[in-house]
Image (cartoon, rainbow, N blue to C red):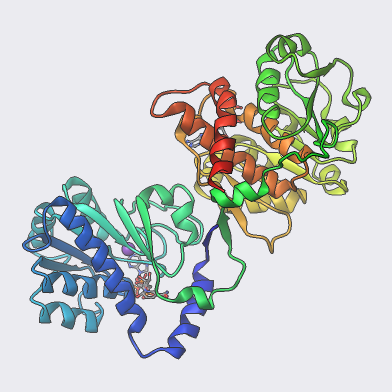
Length: 487
Ligand SMILES: NC(=O)C1=CN([C@@H]2O[C@H](COP(=O)(O)OP(=O)(O)OC[C@H]3O[C@@H](n4cnc5c(N)ncnc54)[C@H](OP(=O)(O)O)[C@@H]3O)[C@@H](O)[C@H]2O)[C@@H](O)CC1
Ligand SMILES: Nc1ncnc2c1ncn2[C@@H]1O[C@H](COP(=O)(O)OP(=O)(O)O)[C@@H](O)[C@H]1O
Ligand SMILES: [K+]
């Protein structure tokens, strides 16, 4: 499991750790890890000796880390120049270390073009403008420097976070530094895992500074990895039969959108349930593609027993949502099923409810513009879970799963790929996830395992070329195997 902690939690843990250690030890650990990673990158592009390194240095400890790392690189023969964005307030010890190692210092803003000249010639830029103390995006002074960095050929290494991103939410207000690599200290922060900030961070590496021992056991955010998913996959035993494995009911498709039914069933057939019961008007299309499906044309209430319902994909105006919500089994509500969804009805349910909106559907439920959801995904998913008293899986560039129990970490899916942005792939996800629910997983586990397998399937089907939703459905078996073989 990969975990991320908020700034407040990190600060508390940092204080506890600092009380036990001599002054400056944590910063030296951070700087040592940072310098080693920079040296590695420089060696891959040539060598450390003689390389041109520029440090962008803000007023806080983030700049201090950059200065001490710069000093280490200068001692190994790199030509290091620090650009001070807040001259007079840069970390004193760091500055002394850098000049003691033969590094140079220029100020920004200045009357000369020096900061821009050194950036244009740099092999490596270390971004130490702001870390977890940064607020409100890059300040106007820093924006031209960030642009010069983007125009240079240098490899860009962010210290702790790319400057300008919001650590706790992954939001990016205005401009931010774009890094090729980010070295973070002690623990990941939400911004390393959630778009849009995650994209600015590039490849993220974690430097162990001993913080793990003092962090609380429950994180704010967690990302499953292969081994975690493998433990959760429902696997049949000698005692299993198709009913014991769980039956998933799929209420999807309409005369207008029969394909949604087929795709949701494709997902459901690969989620571990023993049988898939399709309920709706697209039974012929479903049977033609998947003859193993049990089909029923009447309302869900008359369709027979299931262990979980999936309602919504391609439903149009067809009824079915109310029946499913009135049942006493877990229900996944997606797409058309989410339209005008009544929070009171959902809150009153005894069995789990899992809502799977994309950003547009989430925005409609929250009555805010879509961009607001996309720029602040973590806030949106938490708010929806609280309002509906339901588990919410917010789809998109970073898929998040929030439980109504706020003590549980929000799950962030690490396997997503933009190739999934293709019509119908969400239908496959809802069928798959509903099947996991029917097989006995809780809503939070079903949502996060579903998203994980779905992303892996898309990656394995795509391998760099466009995929269709049908391809994703067909590759789910490969993804499942991939995960369970690693366990
Ligand atoms: N936690 C740990 O365990 C460890 C932490 N370590 C390191 O410390 C870092 C945190 O250091 P930090 O607390 O000094 O904050 P930091 O990010 O340097 O910013 C501080 C100053 O920036 C300013 N400022 C604010 N917004 C701004 C903006 N948009 N644009 C420009 N300036 C802005 C603001 O000052 P202001 O100008 O508002 O007076 C604020 O005081 C952390 O990220 C990690 O690198 C490691 O050394 C070891 C272990
Ligand atoms: N930029 C992106 N990066 C990663 N995954 C994405 C991106 N855009 C969409 N997705 C994924 O693609 C799927 C699309 O689902 P959805 O929006 O419901 O589409 P549809 O209704 O056509 O099936 C979701 O699993 C979502 O997380
Ligand atoms: K930074």
